Image (cartoon, rainbow, N blue to C red; front, side, top):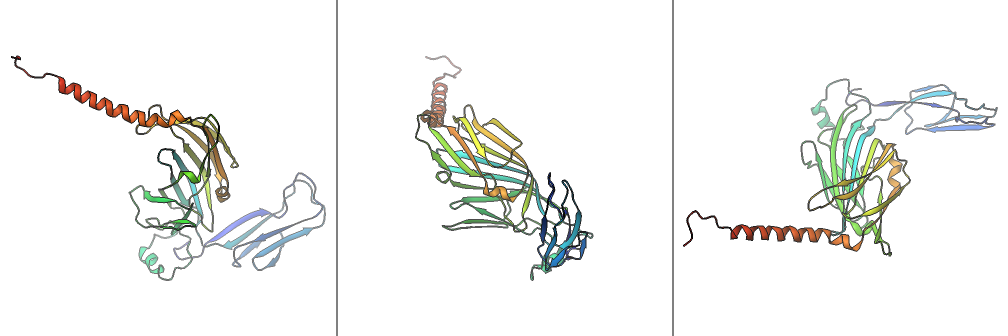
Length: 331
């Protein structure tokens, strides 16, 4: 399509519900977003505005029967698809902080441009804001109390962002460096901090068990929806965490435990990586619960490491200062 042209989608479906049993009576209703529907093929439906009714079928529908129908309707909005999402959730007991970082590889699955992109024409349309199939911005609703957000891409920091926070909600508004038309791609990363006390609870038992509950997905929330090809959620627990258990309503294809090493770590932090395929927006309402044991002694691992490191530096400096490196003989 051209840059300012309407976009139409083709939807093919079965007018009867696939079933392993014979059905005595059924009816199918299809509701589209608007009334601009130039083509309707098959099924002979009853139309009322943007709603099509197929049936009711009073005769017996045999098991496994299907009747194909196709509609073409106007949808001048971007079809946002994340081919890959990497989401890191890092727990810090000492700082009382939950650090979240998400890395996206986005693409617009809408119709491709048949001509070269015209920046002058695009700039002119910004004054009256017409419907477009290009991705202009992303809105990321965050939990109350979120802070310190950032937005970067392959080039560096992206300044076209806005963060609004109040007592009830927090909203991060992102604008890519360029409009993402059909077939175009855009990769970026966002991150923010949150108060750990809003997500973590400590159980009163000798093992020092903790329960962490976080959303499986956060990220952008758009009216037209977002689909995800592959989602990897990595939970990074404090060093010394053990006996990790987890629970989620999202269907997973794999769960892996590993070790993540960063500054001032000794043996590394326990991590759990959850992988899911073909995820849709409904996963935003589903939680991820991780339970782990964190004994009282493990909390002093990092301070002891810092103390021993500083002590070793001073001892080394004192030992070097005591060395006699003079060339002449002592009198």
